[in-house]
Length: 181
Image 1: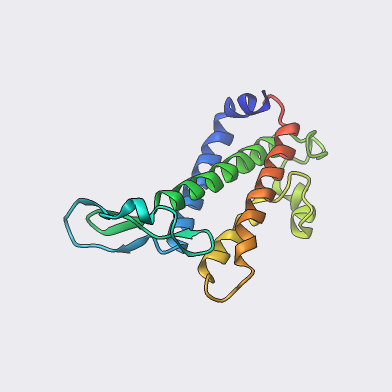
Image 2: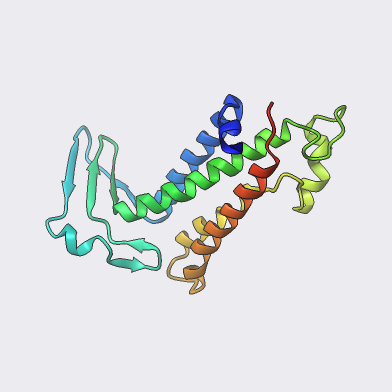
C-alpha cells in the first residue's frame, strides 16, 4: 500500500528512476560489461554454448558474459544473470531513493521543523551519517566498489548479499514512513 502511495509522487519517482538507471550503468561498467565497439555497426551475438555458460561464474556474483550487443560507440557484453542482479539492486536503489526524497519533502516524517525545509536543516545529521531518512546512497556503493576490486578483496563474496539485505531493510524502513504528499 505504501509503495502505491510512493509511486504516485512523480518527483520522487523521477529522481528514484534516474538514480536506479545511473546505478545500473555503474554496476554494469564495474563488472566489465562495456567494451570499445566498432563505429557505425549494430549487432547482437549470443554464444553458441549459452546453456552451459548461463550459471558459470568468473568471480563471486559475476557470471560469464554470453551476449554481446554491438552499438555504434561501444558494445555491451553481459550475462542475463548479471543484468538481473543489477536490475534487482537498481530497483532497491530506486525504492530507497524515491522514499528518501518523499520523506525529505515531508518535514514531520524526519522531525524537521516546517520552517526549516532547506538542506541546512538536515546537514548535521547527514554529515554524521545518521540522517533520519536513511542515507541510502552509501549502501549500494559497497557492491560497486566490490565489483571494481574483484581480484583484490576476498570479502567481496559477502558484499553483494549484504548490499541486498541493507537495501531491502532500508526500503522497508523508509516505506513504513511514506505519507501522502
